[in-house]
Length: 332
Image (tube, rainbow, N blue to C red; front, side, top):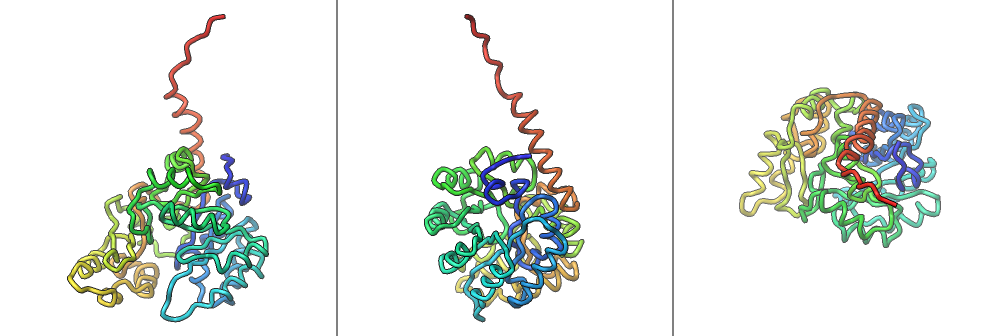
């Protein structure tokens, strides 16, 4: 067992997090993550309405009696999202941990904190992490450039970003991006983090609500099988490399290209139906990190968590002490 500021602050057995993932962060996965002793997040906006989120929270509680949280991602949308209503459901349902991402969480923090909810904010740069701490969040999840999703435009990998953030933050730090093993957990702790967040590793689990073909593709892929997209539109993203994401990158590189030129390819609805639903891994744009190169099997969440913690303990207790040179004997 590892005891860190994260495990103590949030009451979680292990310093492992399965952060919010659109279309993946449902009760099936999050309940299994919680039962394994890690912290999982239901994704609020995966549910079409606040009422549906309430029902999903109930479903998750039918699966686990362990702590879990809800992710509330704040993004500009064509159709207004009732964020206040989702927030109120989170509070009314007695959720005690929230992960915010995307936009500024400030409008929601007073209500969350008044209800005793602890807030983890996801950031992709030290400056954003410091701002989140100043706003009063309880922890920061810092995403290195290796991550799936939106790593920002600075392109700073975790080996630099994690200690740079840990050096200036007083709140617990969760390291994210390219982590899938016990060695990654130990490295993150050594760099100053208090826990690690893993998305792609938890996608390749038996409980993840995505097609088996996607899970097998993650195992088959290497660290080279990701694609950077949307950089030309000021919204850099890392996704799995396939014919669709390569085409998006090619079209985006044309002079005068706009997001409208690739919107049909990047459609989330298309990916959910074709990729996650039907198992056509070339049927849409889907998300995965460079950690694909570290994932060798599809296993249940309990096995994934157990193996990562066991490997980390072995490294700390057995491998690392061997690097210390014997101290010379002292004479009286």
